[in-house]
Structure formats: structure tokens, C-alpha cells
Image: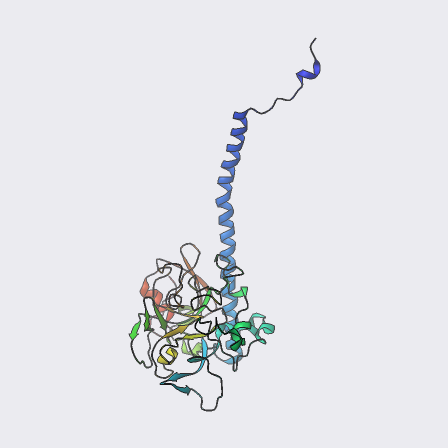
Length: 358
């Protein structure tokens, strides 16, 4: 006898039908995933651009309050021939290793980033902001408490969300002050004041670079009136993907967003004085500063040789270029195909080439 219930029994999927459904789902995921990734990267780029904008505005607020931009990094003195040389005969600031490196621009603008509480934890008058060199600090952290407890504080205001290194164990900074631009002059032995970036001979490939023809350099006191090329034609801040992210206690010469000048102990002299700050062997670089010397994104990753790459090359994890903040407070995305000459000119505040970002 025919059973009515048997005629209404649902039919199961066949294997072929199931495979077709799976294939359709896979195709849809394949179509949607790139779109999701593009949306995510667009959001990251917008956040990065806004980070730079806020940093540039903080620099301008500092300028309004002090009639000048902050120093790229304060430098109080150096060691020459085994003797301590201070820029001020009256100061009694401590010296660490071979450099008296004070607070960088990135710490000095904290009150204008609504981070006054964090600013108050730093000693910007007598603290050492040299960065973390493995020769000393990885073996004796308690001897330099301001190095370990103050600089080693993560600050997401200095991080681009597109940088995969910005995690709890390898955070650093993606934004550097621009200390100048141009072809480098290689210096061996001693150096004097220069209007072009100076490359040292201690680490020559790639070279650590100093410059003083930009806006934020060692002991800079630049104001808007000294930027003769025009504020819309001069870089203030640059994006980087080359900041050394080795964690404290590991090999290398890592630093953080709050580090100032890195100078090498081997020479017994401080490289920073080679640019109008005195006379010394060039053997260091600015940790949170960069000079526009090479093309965008032209250096290889990873960059792990003591801030050599970050001192002379800019770049980002965004496709096609990198963000820069200009001295008028605007932020521009500069593409990789910009001419090297035009890029270098934007790093120089008064080279007589006032063309803006193409």
C-alpha cells in the first residue's frame, strides 16, 4: 500500500550539488575578500594620514607657544679626545657613554597632543634620550632608568596601522622629523658646519646621515620665517617603515618614538657636532629624525643596522608611496615615482627650489 508520508520525505543533497554550493561560496569569498582588504587598507591610510596631521598641528601649536618649532633633538655636549665638551659652560647635565642626548621633538610636543600626563613622566631638562644601544643598556638597565622606564612606553599616536611591526613586542615609530635633504657629503675624521646631509664613514652602506638644512634637526630652532622655500614646499615630518624595531635587550641599536640622538662609542666623539654643533668624527644619527637622501621605498627590509636606513630613506607599507607632513600643516601622499631631485628639494627649507609636492 502506498504511504502518503513517504511521498513528502525531503530529498538529501547529492554530492555534486553539495560541491556546487561549496564552489559558489568559495567564489563569493574570493570576490569579497579583496574588497574587504581594500576597505581595511583605506581605513588604515586615513588613520595614518590623520596621525601625521595631528603631529604636524602639535608642532605648529608648539611654534605658537614658543615662536619656533621644537628641536629635532636636544644635544647638550659630546666627548672629544677623552674630554667632555659642553655647549653651555654652566650646565651640569650628566653624560652617558659619548653623547649628551636630550629630548626629541616627539617628546617635546606631547602637551600639544593632549598627552601632558605622559610628558610629565619625562625629564626633558636633564634626562638622557640617547636610545638603546646593546653595548650598555641591554646589560645594565638599572644604570639608566630614564632610558628603560620612560622611553620604553608605547605611544600609538606615532604608529601607522598599516605597519605589521606595530605589535606589543616590536612597536617603534612610523613618523620622523625631517632634518634636511640633498645628496650626502661623506666625511671622514672631522667635519664642520654643512648645508647638505653628511654621511659618516663608520657605517657606510647604508650610511648614517645627519643634516641641518631642514626644519627638525639636532639643536634646531627653526621658525616659519626661516623657511624661505615656503611652508607648502618644505617637509616637516616623514613616514617611515625602516625604523629599527628590535626589542630592548636584543642585539642591535633599537630605540623608540621617544629617543633622540644615537652616537657611537667607538670613536669617543659625538657625530651630531659635525653639523654646526662643533667638530667631531661622524659616527651616529638621529633616531627620530631623517634626511631626504634616497628615493621613496628604495631600501630593502628588514632594516636592522642601527637606524642607518631610517636616517636617509623614507617609505611606508601603503601601496605606491608614503605620507609627508608639510610645514604649512598639510599632509600629502608622495608617490614613489617622484623625481629624486624634487624629493630632496622638499627636504631642504631654503635651497631656492620652492616647487611643492607634484
